[in-house]
Image 1 (tube, helix red, strand yellow):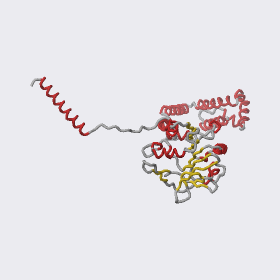
Image 2: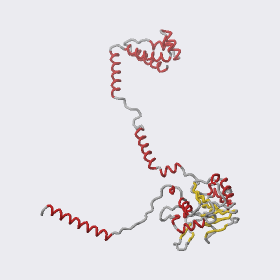
Image 3: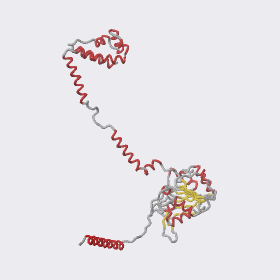
Image 4: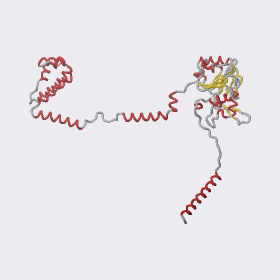
Amino acid sequence: MSPRARNALIAVLALLLGAVVLVWFLHNYERVSRQVPLPAYGEPTYNDLFALRETLRRDGNKAETQRQLNLATTGLQPGDTVLMLDDPRKLSPAQVEGLLDWVEFGGHLLLRAPAADEDTDSEDTGLLPRLGVVPSAVDARCQHWNVPGQEPHQEFCQGNRFRLDGSTRAERRWGDAQDDTLAWARLRYGLGRVDVLAQMDFLLNGKNEYDTGLRDVPHRDLTRLLLAPNYGKGTTYLIYAMEMPSLWKTIYKRGWPIWVPLLLALLGWLWMRCQRFGAELPSPRGDRRSLLEHVRASGEHLHRHGKAPLLYDAVRQTFLKRLRLRAPIAAALSGDSQAQAIADHLQWPVARVKTALQVPPSRDDTALRERIRLLIQMRNLL
């Protein structure tokens, strides 16, 4: 078979094999489209009421989101609506008075009931006590919410239930027959209304297929019912976080890809630079040890050949050098005057100082050691 025929046969076999694989793939698989929700980015990551704001705007309403409630700059009007996610017990007395005055003339306020707290619930100056709302410590229970054409829903399953005192006027209330606690209540306050809810997760952005938020039709209907009193009349202010998040908590949770490597690098640098544990004092170096041996051998050689006065003179010169630094007047003198000045400075007997300053005989080892000992003591006392 010629090379051209062989190459043609190989090409035909490759095409047949490719056709078989293509037929098998098209027979076993089909092309379908699927929607995959992407993770949120930008404002929806920190503003849980972003979806509600955009929904209200598309419906022709005025809606604004704010991190903190600032009554001085907001300028609330009687037909406005304020929805707050955070604990209403964090409001200052001035904010409580301002909100109640605004609600009394036609405002609509929506609050989330906080968990029961004996320390803070006993105060009478907060917003909830002024409205007659008492947080309850009973376990959360679901409320059935059915919308025609939709699957049955259950709301407030993780909420904080509450009670109303006897003096509170409730326009609407939503609870069950198990006790007197409620999951939602609409209170009348002057010309306005205050809605207290056990939970607000149904009107938030939603995170996944289990936490759907406003993506569910029943949740949108419930939200529309809650906003009904002033819907379309004024501006809806959505307060999603009255308190700024802690800087250190944010760094700890979101900044760990930066601070963990930096911390490890710092610990490694400290480990590299820190002092190692070992002997209290290092051993003398070899060359230094040899120098000491040479000095000792030189002294023994001088002493053996009757040159002891040279050893004494070396110690005496060391003493005089120290004397010139510590008592220059005594060092400038000589003879008995110098001995008397040194004795006065050291508070020693003059005879003892004179003995130390006299050169010992060359063969008197006892006198040599005594005078060297006295000179060393005198030098140490200067």
